Amino acid sequence: MPGSAAPVAAPPLPAGPVSAAPSAPPHRTAPAVSLTDRIRASVDHQLALAGGDTDTARTALVKRAIPDVMKLFTASRIGGRYEHTEFPPTETILQKRSQKGTDHIWEGRPKWRATDLHQAAHAGHITLHVTALDINGAYLAALKTWLPIGRLTHTRHTTHDPKRAGLHHITPPPWTHTDLPSPLGARQQPGPLWITEPTLRLLLRCARQGLCEAPVIHESWTSGASEGLLEKLRRALAEGRKTAIENQDDLTLDYIKAMYSKFVSTIGESTANREIRRPDWMHIIRSQAFANLWMKAYKAHAAGLTVVEMSGTDELHIAGDWQSVFAYGRDLSHVKPKHTYSLGGHEA
View (tube, one colour):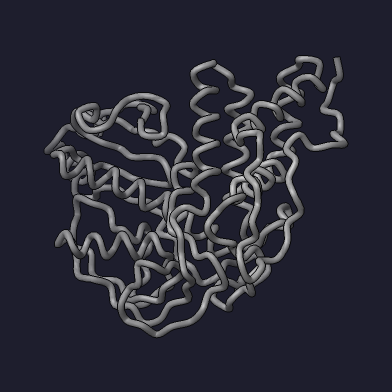
């Protein structure tokens, strides 16, 4: 039995070469092997190389997660309606302002707590029994989002075109609700900012529901868009994840988690992934995860529950009967309780 993962000469997830987008979609034949079968074959291959040692196989699979998920993505696009651009020019707003700095895009990452509730609890006026909920597979679920297909182009339109997606320079509306987090997340600085497609669509949805005014759009960098660019990949990973959970197969579960999390984190400017450079996609997927979390908070609030805290991509603290609103479990549509605590009284 080998003590460490051996290098693999031939990858278990074959795919054709990556090339620049042609002027018209080529006629390609769908692969005979399904994407989920490829995932299973990769796990079996590494497990066999490791002589059945799951820890060694896990190390090898996590190491291979980036090239393997990119091969899955390439295979998932066979027969697709659109040919996406893999290396569009990086616009100024997507360029880092320093070597270790960030670009101009605000993703809407939340870090919020209901200040009034906490103050009342510390003063001894209220006691709340709170459950910290964990949102399953937040980045995997966020792969279902509107993504720009080609190169981003600049416009100064003041209205949103739902058939396009990208990045938008806006002046956000005031957010006056103390019992709900802002869709903009933890941003404190006032004034105009660059946001992504999911954040803009969420703000517009809030405006339609009367929660705030509509944001003022100043300019945008967008392309024709599709909500299905990553859908086949998302479904394959979700199906593989579900099967792994049912079979108590932690090895495959860890491999799949490594694939989708590394896909999101490396499709921007990372040197770990040289097959695509779409920082706009990276920002959009992350923002979609934050928008999905906000929608869960709003769903709980609309059902009469108390939203106590919300942070990151997957943490939501709720007071009240959360199981009347959310299903318990490990599926992507389910949530899991992390822990419970009391806010106020002797625990405040």
